[in-house]
Length: 94
Image (tube, rainbow, N blue to C red; front, side, top):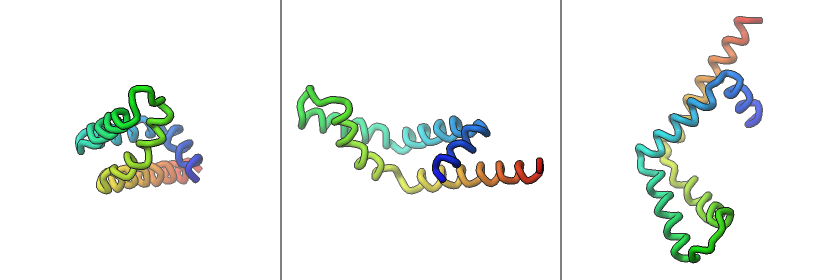
């Protein structure tokens, strides 16, 4: 389902606008700054020689869990709305 949802959103040209909305909301709520601090702490704990992949592995789960529920709900609602709109358009053209 994830692939078909992505395909539908890409085809409709909505994926980029949804990504931009998510980026803006994460900046507005301070998530981006919080993740930046997490990364700095991990680098400080592990030294400057930590690889990007290792840093990513250490921060990903924590960062995802810190995304505010309101941002998740807003994005999910936008995705649902776009999919419903695309479904309606398909029904009209058939």
